[in-house]
Amino acid sequence: MPQVSEIRERIVNAAEGCFARYGVGKTTVEDIAAAAGLSRATVYRSFAGGRDEVILAVVQRDLRRFLDRLAGRLRRERSVPDAIVEGVVDAVAFVRGEPQVAALLTPDAAGHTQAAVVGGARSLLDLCADYVRPHFGAAQRDGALRPDITVEGAVEFLFRIISSMIVMPREDEPREFLRTYVVPALAESN
Image 1 (tube, helix red, strand yellow):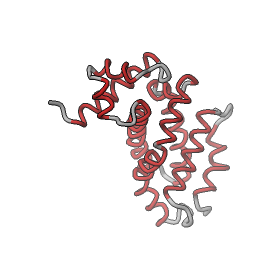
Image 2 (tube, helix red, strand yellow):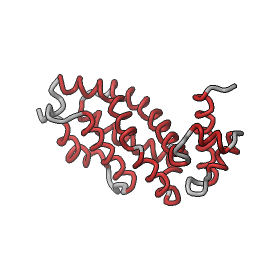
Image 3 (cartoon, helix red, strand yellow):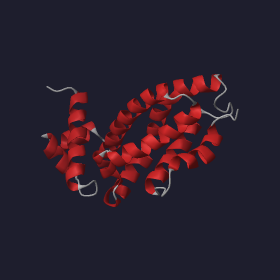
Image 4 (cartoon, helix red, strand yellow):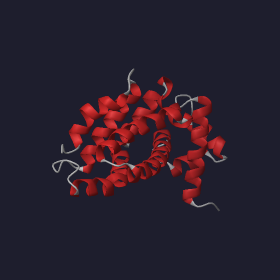
């Protein structure tokens, strides 16, 4: 008999496939259950919140993939301003370049995804904060980040910046905008 985590993973995989095939707005719990080869009741036992909870699980998995990539980038960047700018640019490119992530942001999916993400926003922000906390703490100890900001506040701020850049792309090079307006909000000026 499969473990609970294996069943949940099957459901998330099936949901991601259904979202890509039918769109988030048209995918039902029945579609996900059929694609996973499970009963509807099993999906609800695994995800008591139903479709919204499944959508959130797909978003969390994609976010973890990005954060794994970001952690490597943070170790390679030479400065905190570079890490902020390149991290934001990379996040926007990741969302736009990953079909399964982009499928969650189509106009058809927007209301459904937004409802799921709003309900789980705290868990998404906490996940991000946990990933960047070691880098954030080291940068504050080194005097590269403002001492009066928290990792949670900085993550939320950057999440909002990234979201706006995804929804309203800049016509010009975003790095200069980020260096001028975003970096000073977080980094110490030396």
